[in-house]
Amino acid sequence: DEIFKIFRILGTPTEENWPGVTSYPDFKASFPKWQRDYSKDLCKDLDAHGLELLEMLLVYDPAGRISAKAAYNHPYFEPLLAQEQASAQTNGYYH
Image (cartoon, rainbow, N blue to C red; front, side):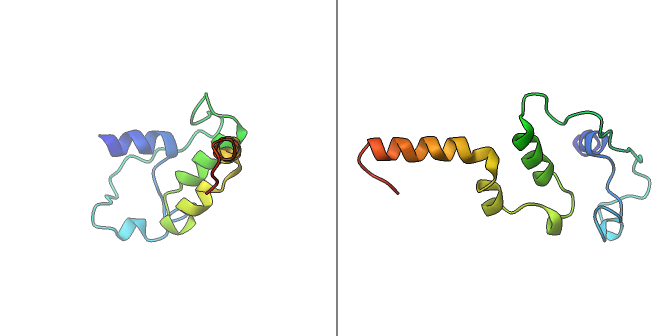
């Protein structure tokens, strides 16, 4: 049921958005074919950078998904990184 919750939100994966998915042993041709509703935000409490990052993290195809390093360097985290750097400087150390 969890997988169907994901499919209802993101749409059922297809060969178009995840090449090879239909040949995976756990993928069933009988899965319901949900389409993603792009008019609805995935999360209402995120700003534009947060939504962009979330979209990049939720890509079905691992080859197209953002890496952990790239996600860490995403503009969404810039305020946190700036705050961390300022805090480190006031504490007398910087890493």
